[in-house]
Image 1 (cartoon, helix red, strand yellow):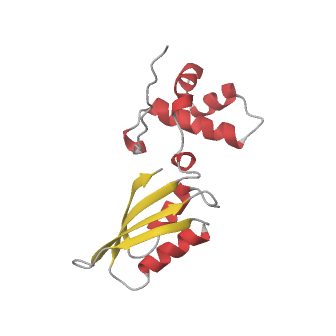
Image 2 (tube, helix red, strand yellow):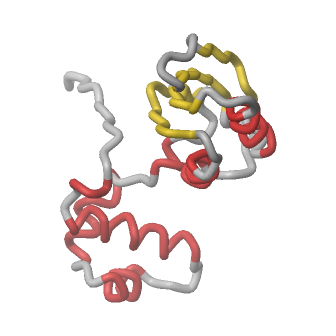
Length: 149
């Protein structure tokens, strides 16, 4: 009987990933967007060998794929100004995220931290787009994904 091994997953900033892994992700994205594109054509477009693509393809997923139908917890550092948290919640709601909990700490030195947990099952936007939109809100200083399940 073979021993089961638990797979660990990490969220890693793309800046520290090797080029082959980044190009594998890019190739997978190309293939998902074009049904007529072959693996050979896709790897040629991004400048990756077929062997490297096949080596990494089952272990590389965009962040938005890993967050579909999950509960995501974000910790957002905000300027202590009226309406900033409300605007964040509005964006999550517009993307059809179902907010489960909100916890906001007391402001300190003009900043406040809010922790928001929400379901992503019915979302119309992928998580990367939503995070970009949240960062565009005036008064949002920092966003961290602190949990998902």
